[in-house]
Picture (cartoon, rainbow, N blue to C red):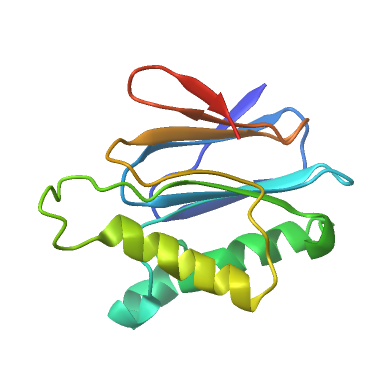
Length: 160
């Protein structure tokens, strides 16, 4: 098994059944896992912010930082490995209310809303989710099976 770490504002894709993609510390950020079971190609995105218009130069430098640039990058990267949109299984996690107890900034909720708008416009359905609340999460995607597992701070594992 090859563990491939997806950092913050990062995206990784794979068609190697030996690979497991993992991202840590999803707080207000969102993790998006996509998988095509026909060709065993999957990808994992860890984006921080909803809209690249906040910083267009940063979006060019690190497109995975934003929902509106990172999500297309994730899907297109999987397509290059043979995945097809109509077969893609999509699962999401994160979007928590972290370090914002008064809920002023609502970054997690804004990230969720941005993702849902992008998916709605592109006819993408979400097959599983673990979002919101006030805890961080770790997400892993196994390329051999497409299995997505979310680990909570208390050690609880949940398959999406």
